[in-house]
Image (cartoon, rainbow, N blue to C red; front, side, top):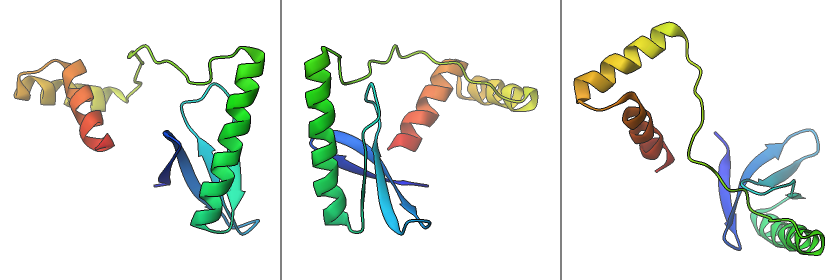
Length: 110
């Protein structure tokens, strides 16, 4: 699992890239790419702030909404056996399949 870092109210996924020996951060939930690299946590925070600032400035110049908006709907593809088990789990809990998936995702997301 990757680590997450919050920078100026935006969340970024953090990974270590062994090929270049640096940590890489990439903001999620933005309408474009905004990534950054550093060799330390403090460096990541500084580079992330710079990357985010430049991204937001470019969005403002181009009149682009910087943050993605989500509809709250998405399609999940499962093997038929997993689908059947999920329906059974939902029935056993007395909830819809949608509610079961929502509960599981909310629990996993913390």
